[in-house]
Length: 141
Image (tube, rainbow, N blue to C red):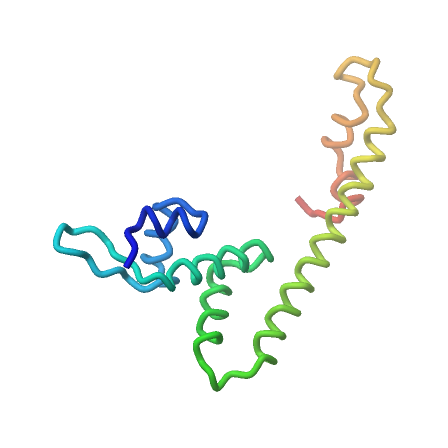
């Protein structure tokens, strides 16, 4: 059994994260020893590392909770996990398209600015005030 500081250190998170994961049900509540300190089984470190890796891949905590449930249910086949990963990849690809569009819009604004004018004539500020920027980037507001 490991105390919360040791678990947090081994898993690469802080103790507040550990307590938060416990509070929202991502890890099991730790029993307390006679002194009132939480004592976690060693497997908790692996579970937290799983959570952190899933977060690194863009999964939200609710999605990670579902992945953990699928991981525990040995009757579940990999197709359900695969479909969740494919959906997450689709989200990432949409975000990348949006970021590329924003990059092109910003590049155009930067190119339009000669950097020598006063701010009342700045094309970047003017574009931010206009409707054109929203249409160029595909955002309504």
